[in-house]
Amino acid sequence: MKDPVFKIHLTPKLYRKDVKMWNGTAIDCYEIGCDCSKCFIYKTYFLPQKWKCYMKRYVKFLLKKVGEP
Ligand SMILES: [Zn+2]
Image (tube, rainbow, N blue to C red):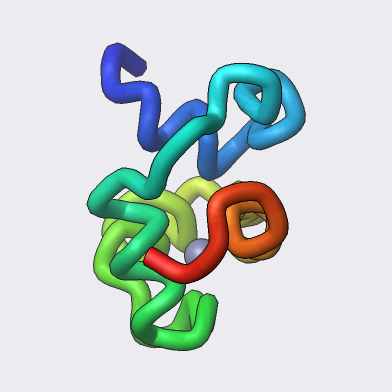
């Protein structure tokens, strides 16, 4: 997986240190209220794999650290 966005979805802890700003996916997640049933990425890539989405934690972390997007 080349796209860091997917890595963040899967393992946000690893990226917390480097997080300084919102990215597109995080904003998307924030705007749908972190509801995975409305999330295109989750439905397309995660659901079929039975992966757990950690985007919600990542969004919460961004809200705390950077504030609203
Ligand atoms: Zn999600």
